[in-house]
Picture 1 (tube, rainbow, N blue to C red):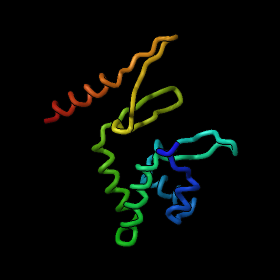
Picture 2: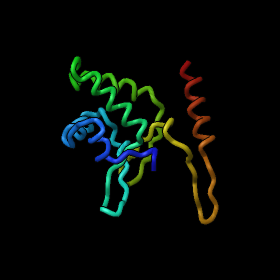
Picture 3: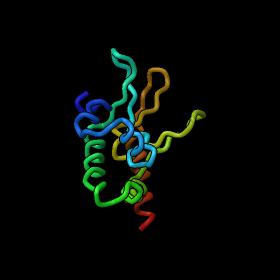
Length: 132
């Protein structure tokens, strides 16, 4: 659980409010897919990947006095567009993951589990070579 940081811990660490964090989320500064909901003994809590969210919050805080949040969001959006993504579509909507964050992708049927991560990564490499 060390790779995760709770929302409460994040807010305390950087001295930001709940409202500020969710304003950043609404503006796209913090991607929706970064929020990890987990059941805990106190109920459901929100966690984040510690490395990703801390880097992002530090970046926002370092720029917010010299740039508007809209400018920061545009800059970060451009970075996000360049990052390869895995989009999983279900009847309940789409989930988008940055490919670099994924550790494994498996398909399961009964007791058989097959990793398809290698194939997904080959598709990404193939698309990069086709773009050049």
